Image (cartoon, rainbow, N blue to C red; front, side, top):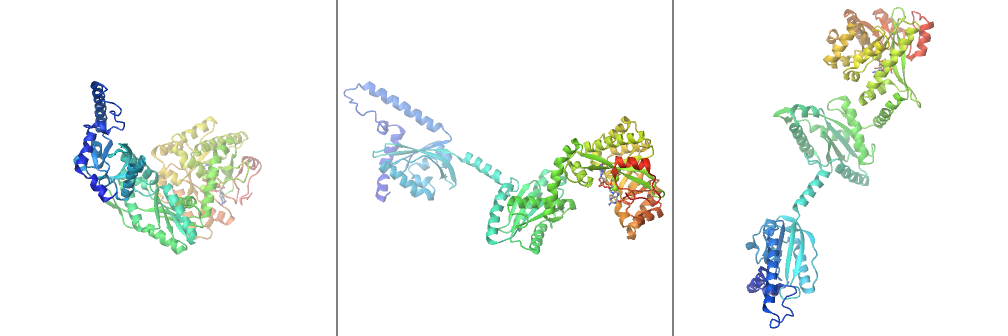
Length: 622
Ligand code: C2E
Ligand code: MG
Ligand code: MG
């Protein structure tokens, strides 16, 4: 647009004219198809013209009323120089200028951002000169404050090919939709609390980081961070304190990260970080220390300073994974291992950790089916009197012999059954099977030997576990002296009052209750006097080392002494050689159990053992 043109169109008279046109006075001039065309006033009746004129005026007023009443629709009219000749309430609301302020101002000075200015002027002049339409579009236009506003803008051209072409813009405010869209975008990519990238975003970022590592032959460490006892912080201090811990931790993590490092929050108290440029063991130690330092200063929670710790799992690129997914998963596996070691532990990923996990997952999935398929059985290991070698009792030990593949140890599958809850069904099966077997042996005339079954802590979580045990015995017509139970120390320590009550009842009815693996658990002896138990089974680790390790021997001797002073029967597990046996005899241990005498064996073998064979004093290894 030339300067002279612009001057010509600034002519105040002309502006007034245009404004009047739109305000309705010489309205017939504005019409695209003027109604007077082809009508000879001398020929047509004056009334008819007047009628049409009135109708038109009314329709125009309705249109104006409509424009004014649309609060969300901004309508502006511009003359051929793009000066404002019309500005409705909606425009004031959307762009911030009152009608008075806007009147006569140039479109490009009011609401067009600098980067669009030339384009708008060109489009407008192309329309005037060549009749090229300006298409409707989503635009960002400028508010009085300078802020950009999203609008959908449509353009209406009037009086084309005349001296006074008018452009009307009808703009709809899109800010709400845009804001909603932006919020949604944010929520899908970032964590609302800490504003850190979420897992999905982190995976994408890490993959592109890995690409550049590959190009530059660079290593990278992925660290999985899990705050210790976060649930307790939440429970004890409330969610807002938990949140403020997470926010403060995020601030510290951000502070210590370099531009190329990545930080994300992947779930409630879990963060994953990536550090490129890690090649050697000292590099790994450096980044781990870096993250640990974040916890050095206490966190202020609920007005008090508290020391917070976290477990870390580390997976390295390229050794432990090629993709973000693999690295995050393996760092997570390592972190879970670290968790088992306690507060603040750090673990590097090892393939074995992962393989173990895969196997556990597979076994877990197979367990229930195995129970249904009858793949479980009980083996029995005799306990013999240390002095005479006579078989006194039998410990029932669970065996899983899958249809395919080798036997799986209870040490491996019992924890899995505990985790999945299948331990209850499995435990019920053990009780049933032991009762059934005992009834059979009793029928064969073997009246002396008790069967002891192992009961895990998780089984006792079910409130009626011990009651069911008693009921099973009754159903089979058995008595307390027929079946006993073994519990570990920790189970007793953690037992609640109802469990202890049930145990006391069993104790008073004459059941045998043994503390299994004695010496490996709680390590305080004072609890012994509180619990209703009848026997101690000294853990085999002490027996194993007693002949060579004076300290183990001392513990063993101490345990036997204390057991006897408390009136308990003392059993030694894992007796494997004559040396161990003679030590135990010297110490007056009551019963011994171990490979030196018998391995655990199927009921059929016990049958023939009990039926045909009285062992010698020296003991026999089968
Ligand atoms: P536990 O109750 O301490 O059982 C003794 C374990 O020591 C058995 O391992 C047995 O085979 C083994 N053992 C016996 N004599 C010797 C020996 O001379 N040397 C060595 N090295 N080991 C010996 P097993 O059968 O693999 O059982 C492992 C654990 O699994 C058991 O430890 C018990 O805690 C658990 N378990 C076994 N059966 C059941 C069950 O029916 N229910 C529950 N809840 N746990 C069970
Ligand atoms: Mg046992
Ligand atoms: Mg044991």
